Length: 137
Length: 137
Image (cartoon, rainbow over all chains, first blue to last red; front, side, top):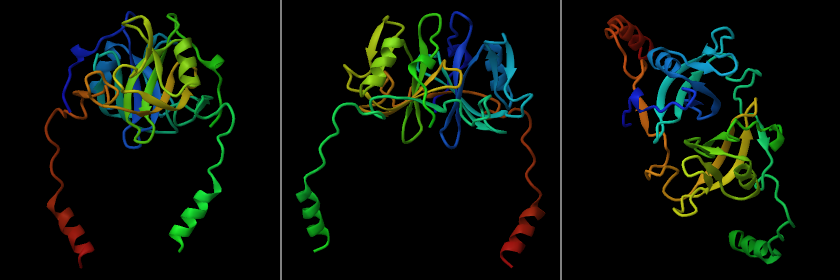
């Protein structure tokens, strides 16, 4: 894997960069949080994830009080440097403050999951007949 | 999976929400892009992802010119409604404009991948001897 440096990370006008947190072995996307320069430095220099809490306006060592810490496996930066991907091993109950493992527990209905319009016609019966004849002669 | 509605999505002060795009079957995180209300509506209502291009300031039907489209499998929203997770089937070369499959191709050196300090001592030899004796009597 090609290497980048912290200097390649582009923080936004608030001095923050979004960090996608993914369970390293299962691939599950656990949460998205934000890092400032200090949070990124501590995450890279330590064993566990540190974020910037936008709601509390302070550094946030994830799981420090709840025990739901995240051991850092690898940190990646995207092609234009404005998003991070943090591969972790999630400890405790999970990443979400609701107690769920992932924060992405709710689905939005879309055209794929909620087909609209008439149901497509069933395949003609002769197809089943043919197949049946061919596979069980 | 519990359902949410578009009304649960909280757009930021620019009217945007970040969308993590993940290959539905392998779990690979392909990219992170942004959606405004229209991009989200089109993504939910159609077959392929549509984003808001912050650099060009316009709607962006991903892959419309390159052919690297993303078929939408499922769209999820996180616990506080300010981030989306879009499960897709990536077509063409990949998600990244560099031609790579994922935008997250570069690693930042961290304490885990770049251990500092002295190398830990090797385990004592008698441990191997013991194990060997026990498993191959």
